[in-house]
Each structure stands twice: as C-alpha cells, then as structure tokens.
Amino acid sequence: MLPFEYARVTGVDEAVNLLAADPSASYLAGGTTQLDLMKDGVLGPERLVDITRLPLRGVTRDADGLHIGALTTMEELAADPVVAGELPVVREALLLGASAQLRNMATIGGNLLQRARCRYFRDPTVPDCNKREPGSGCAAVRNTARMHAILGVSERCIALHASDLAVALVALDAVVRLHGTSGSRSVPLTQFYREAGTSPDVENVLLHGELITGVTIPPLPAEAATGYLKVRDRASYEFALASAAVVLVMRDDVIAQARVGLGGIGSKPWRSLEAEQVLTGAAASGEIFREAAAAAVQGAWTVPGTAFKVELAQRTLVRALRNVSGGAR
Ligand code: FAD
Ligand code: SF4
Image (tube, rainbow, N blue to C red):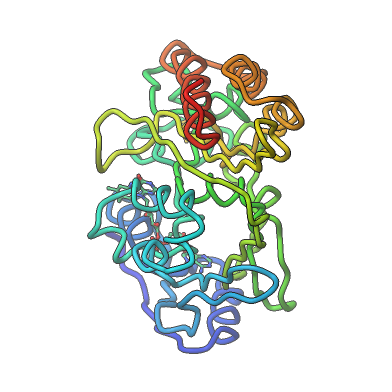
C-alpha cells in the first residue's frame, strides 16, 4: 500500500473543507471498499479523511419519511424497527449482502459508493480499463466477463454496480442528501448515478469533497407490499447475478402502483420504468409479469459471458413479482 496521511474529523464542515482543498484526498468510512482497493494498488489517495466520528449515524422518522444517517451501518439499518417491520425490501437487500462482519463495518454512504467488482478494474497489472485509466480500453469486453452488466453499458465499459441496497432504494424513490463547500442539496437516487457506458470513470454526480450525509425514503402508501429477490452463485456472501426489488400497491387483483428496481445487470442500480408501465393498471397474472420482465431487458447489450443474464433477469423479476403480489401465478 502506498503511504498516505490520515486525519480524523469530528465536524461535517471540517470534513468537507479538508477534502475539497486536497484533490488527492478521499473519505474513509467503514473502509471495506476503500482499503481493499488501496491494498490492491488500484487507489492511492495521499490523504484519508476518517469520517466515522461525524454525527451522521442513526435512523429517524417524520412526515417526510425515514431519514438514515450516512454512517449508519448496514447491520444497524437492517435491525431498525421501522425497516424490519415495514420495509422488507430494504431489510432483505441488506441481509442478503456481504457477511455479518462486513455489515457491521460497512456504512450506508459507503455502500452507495462502493466501486466496481470488475476483476480487471481491481487488477492494476491489466492495462486496459477505461474506469481506472480513461481511454485505455476495456479488458472485460474482449476477455471473460460474467459478473458484469447488460443495461447502461457499451463497448467502453460493462462494469456492474453491485450494491443490493441501492436497488431497493431506487425502487423506493429514495433521495440522497449531500453537503459540500457550497452548501447542501438533495438528489433523487435515480439521478445520482451515471451509466458506465458514457464516461466509465465518472460514476455519479458527487463533486470532489461533497459528503453523503444521509438518505431519505419517502413514506409508502399504507397498502404497499415490498420484497427483494437475489439470485447468486452461492447462497451467502456473494454478489447478485440478478436481483429485483419490487414495490406493489394492489387493489383487489389489479396493480394500482408498481415500482421495479433491478440489480446484477445494470451499470447503475436500475429502475425499470418500462416494466412499471406494463404493470400499472393491469390485472396481476403470470402473463403480465412476463411481459413486464421482457420490457425491462429491452436494450440489453451483452458479450458472450453475460448473455445468460437476459433470461435470468426476466425470471428473477417474474418470481419477485409473484412473491410480492402474493399470487401463485
Ligand atoms: P468505505 O470503504 O469506507 O468507502 C467506500 C467509498 O465511499 C470510498 O470511495 C469513500 O471515500 C466513499 N465514502 C464513504 N462514505 C462516504 C460518505 N458518507 N460521503 C462521501 N463519500 C463516502 N455490497 C452489497 O451491496 N452486496 C453484497 O453482496 C456485497 N458483498 C461484499 C462482499 C465483500 C467480500 C466485500 C468486501 C464487500 C461486499 N459488498 C457488498 C460491498 C460492501 O457493502 C461495501 O464495501 C460497503 O458497504 C462500503 O461501505 P464502507 O463504509 O466500508 O465504505
Ligand atoms: Fe474497466 Fe469497466 Fe472494462 Fe471493467 S468493464 S475493465 S471496469 S472499463
């Protein structure tokens, strides 16, 4: 690991000012992504600003929804009574991710900003990676690629955004709260990420120095049902090959509202408005679920190693819709 300076801060403005003044500095939260990449020689910040003592931990609720501090750990959020009781989609997405040890360290802000799991990105001896070195090419497109994306990609980059939680949060219309040297702003999570297909090295709208202070989940209609389904190579401690976060409001057998997030297949946590359009106002049935799933993968761009995901993603969404609608369709 390259040498670096370490600073621990206790105030949000102190953190933001320190980072904004130093282009080579990075924030350190739980460290489960940041330190891995530094040890592998992929990242080499000259200064780490440790934000773990900032007062950004915990979950509160008011009329605007559920407010989650950015330094709340994955395990703490999964155990929150509102999440456990009313938001199974969030709890399931959290508990199906990583391991208990990691979830005890990993924070919500860090989870949203986790980096690509592409093996070529994580191996600095591979010269061609547009995400690491803009303009150098994409090793994944011409070599073996399996844990990669099929939506929001191009021949420039097929890296996946691997966060399970973010898939649930896009389906819940969550908003990210940011604070920087020019003040605070809120960005809907659906507009926070950039697709890897354009400039793979720019992954989101965060400015250098801007801090994620929290996430807000707006209230759901009282009759909404939610769920998360994750399909992976082994039953625990594995990233998604495909996943689906579903929010449905059913009136009798008719889908009054539908929100669909897809994981394991997008260069960003994928919100499928196409699937939602098919579902909304339709009577719940296997046929309509399959039609929605087909709409969700329209525009998929595959390489030989990822072609299987077109079918897998559809089956995953159909099953998630069945589970959440409560039907054996
Ligand atoms: P850090 O590593 O501290 O930071 C990550 C990045 O975010 C850094 O760039 C840091 O500078 C930046 N950052 C952190 N907090 C903020 C903030 N508040 N504002 C601005 N920038 C910030 N995730 C899943 O969703 N599903 C899985 O199945 C899964 N499996 C995993 C398996 C393994 C073996 C590992 C190592 C990780 C896995 N993860 C998985 C990813 C894990 O959830 C993330 O590594 C973790 O959530 C990152 O949080 P952190 O607090 O450790 O972030
Ligand atoms: Fe790099 Fe993206 Fe290609 Fe992976 S898929 S090698 S991250 S450019």
